[in-house]
Image 1 (cartoon, rainbow, N blue to C red):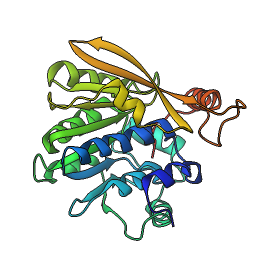
Image 2 (cartoon, rainbow, N blue to C red):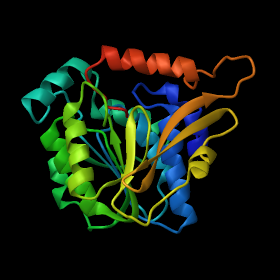
Image 3 (cartoon, one colour):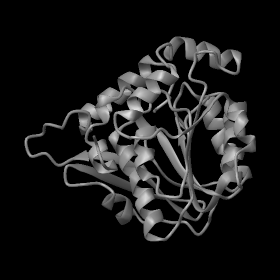
Length: 273
């Protein structure tokens, strides 16, 4: 059985899903950042698919923290648009499949909320979470509510991870995300082609060198810096250090880009987990 996040990242390809090693390293990096600064809190994933990203987050849980996963675990959807997307891309989704994948790497399941993310309105206490992965519905109204819930739940130093925040097939996610940035003081920290990492805590900041340091000799992270609204914002991309130009399975730079491009052009959903 895999015993830590680093070992699991090397085996990401074993679970289907649109979750790539660049984002896995960043999520693990923010966990390291939290640990170094004594930041504690629960973890939440909204939208788990088959468990690819949930397995990673499970390794980040430290006692007495809770890890909670919320998903419909069906193709029904809470809106007509969501149901149509789910029928097209998530026919293989089921709670049994998620649990089987998760238990391949962990001995105990996370707390599971099987239902729409609107049921998280009662989740608490407020300010008791340090990391929330928003990767559920792509409709504006649902993502907007998910971000409102996330803002209420996150404590000092808390990080929200928004999947598909800039994809052409998910304008609802983009609209809700930019609305949160412009109207609720959500502060972007860094981003990849797939995900945005942000916070409502103005004291939370990382440097480009820190983000680069979250990589490894085999899985390197390249960082491009921007000054946006008087804060540094980093674009993170994958780099390869292999001498022969070949990339490890599931980890490669050009291979990775080709895979992501084909997935984006060929699918209608961005659920990563």
